[in-house]
Length: 281
Ligand code: NAD
Image (cartoon, rainbow, N blue to C red):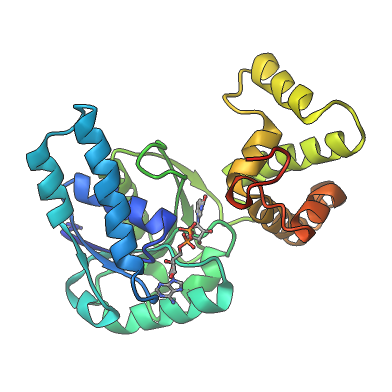
């Protein structure tokens, strides 16, 4: 299947990054958001990142302008000529189910619908459409332009043709793919979140200070960031949410969120984005 035009639904942190890498790969992108001003903000972020690349001599001005010109603001009604949609809206199941129903109505019959969800089953999103074989998970990492990985998740209904087209698109965007079953947390969060959660338990038990725990993992395991520092970066609210998804979805005690993590979130200490988490920013 030839993918000429991609739509990205949601112009936030992830959606604008996905639109950027698609445009950089020479693909026309339609960027859609429900909130007034969001697409403009997303486009502004893309322009800023491309400008930074120009200043570092990693990109020339002509390529920057051509890349920016490939991304245009669009509405649901403008998507009739799109071959592939990546949905990157807020992580809320009813909102995503509603968006998938709407996309199914406006997209051409051949179009593939991918979700960047971190936690909602692809199988369930697929069942909300009349084209479940053409629905798939495409889980980009944050920040999208810098991170090499895309997890590809097949719902139980996903066809081989949809899977092959998605792998080909991810490769065209310069990403390396891994394939995960449609299980809570997929691969990355299934392994990452229990480690961050365990660091919260260790901290609560006084095993070491936050700095000790982070330094131990940085120098002892060659991790670029310590687990508490990384939890602050991801957002403690997001870590708690995913820990709850793992606990509920896999049903085992070993996934239970650390009470300290819950308490920090209750206090509004979300990490870097709120100015306070395990560290102060
Ligand atoms: P964000 O809040 O930055 O952006 C979400 C955007 O979606 C907002 O601009 C919002 O206005 C828009 N939106 C909400 N409902 C909409 C609708 N019905 N139609 C159109 N637009 C709508 O969120 P984000 O961090 O970019 O996350 C987006 C998705 O990516 C989520 O599913 C999240 O789980 C996933 N994800 C996030 C990360 C991360 O680190 N932030 C990493 C991987 C995957």
